Length: 93
Image 1 (spheres, rainbow, N blue to C red):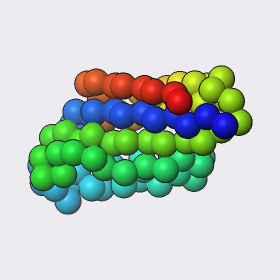
Image 2 (image 1 turned 120 degrees about the vertical axis):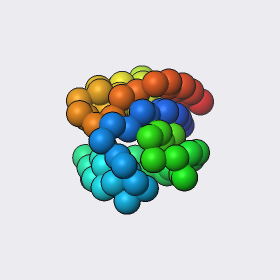
Image 3 (image 1 turned 90 degrees about the horizontal axis):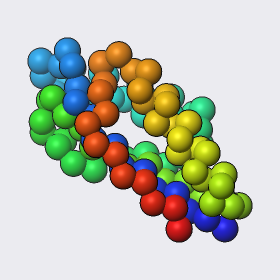
């Protein structure tokens, strides 16, 4: 069994309020949960409308599967037009 953890810090564009930020982040979170079967949570900068830090966790049979799933997630995040990845860290146990 392997556990994969990914932390992404995003710069958010087009959010003039926290409500705008939620309207950008929440659909992304729901899509990731639905399509990739990952646990997702906002970790930091909850009161900052221009950035967000999200944590993702995944359990798989092997570390190779975790690396693949987390790489797919990063690719998906890079496609988001209102989000830009500023920093990422990945750990597979």
